Image (cartoon, rainbow, N blue to C red; front, top):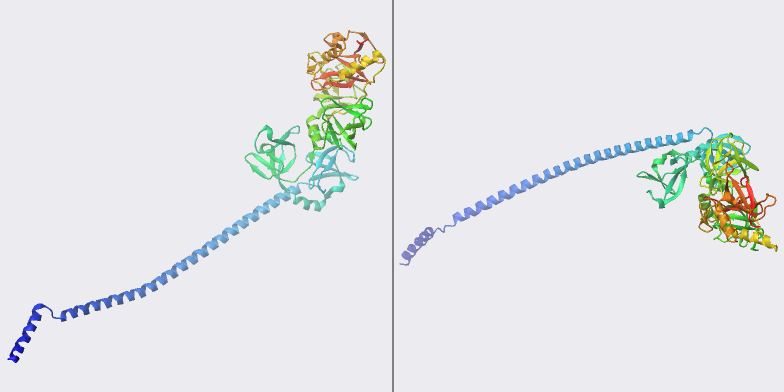
Length: 551
């Protein structure tokens, strides 16, 4: 039984597994196929990876080679550009060097100034006391025209004059030295009688003018900005300069500067009327007064003793106070003098004829004295129109003097001291009264001239002035000078005394001006708008009549 049962059982289980699909062989086949596929995929990936790396390396090598070639091309371009730039710079430098050399070569007989700072004076004549007509800065140049002893005759910057040979480099040394001094300069091109403003900023404002540049002057250019040229001292308009490579040359002396250069150590009076010049360095009242220095008048300082300057001004040598409220020195004096110097006719003969017209056919109607300096109103060929006085007539005669006989020098000048000694108080009652009248009149020196005026403080004309002075002492006078000239009694010049009135006439013989005699050959009078009430010599023009209206 057991055998039968066993045999029956086994086939039944096999049939049961077959029937349920649990035969393991298909599964094993499937697993083997998957594994085989995976191996193939991995193999392909490995092969492709290996091949791709080689291609990447080849690509990188190609890129690197291309970059190297590009870099070599860029370096070649850079080197080429650098070479071109250097070539252009060399050409530019060579051209500039040629321009610089041309500037030097423009001088036939070159002279270069060799001084340590300051200026070298250019003089009108070959002498150390010759008038200074120009100045040359260190390293400035000139054309040497000739030689007279220790002086070179030169031309530079429009100045024709003489300089000491001691300070001039010549020949090839001069040319070598000059080549180093060629710079871009602004050469002023304004007219000879004009000047160019130097301004603090590159703008046209009245408040920023700090100086003037004269025709022909040369300034090193520091910059050029929208119509302006920057120089060391400020800005100048580009419209009035020629900017180019150039050497520095002489500078003409401004006519006003020439007037100032005559004073070695300048002093200018700052008072509004007159500053006393004393014989000794002490204030002794009226006892030691020997002169008067008018307002803005000039003097040479000769020395100093305590609180006093010893000065020389005109024909007066004496002492004035050092008080800075009364006098200016140094740069302050120069600035005042530059603003004050006026064109004057300086007479150098005892008497000079004055005519109504600039012609010898015009009659002589008065004469002027060399003791005075006369303001110039105009200049013609051979003639100068001067200001005598305004008088008390609305229209004054023109006054012309001839310059053809060299009897007058027309130049910028400053007022200078006048000799003056105060009247001493005299016991004689009559003389004492005259002294008081004169001293009273002198109190108003410096006050303004006003045509038709009678105010001693606010302004008067000539007849208004003497009328108001006399009125203070109970003396009545007519209003105008031609009527005043009929008052009192006539006296001669040898008889006149302080307080007497001196009258002057116009070209038609009509009295038009009056002055008061103050002694010592001087008068006080309301002269003109320019001069105001001032002191003059009694014969600054020919007197017409003298009258005693006091006694």
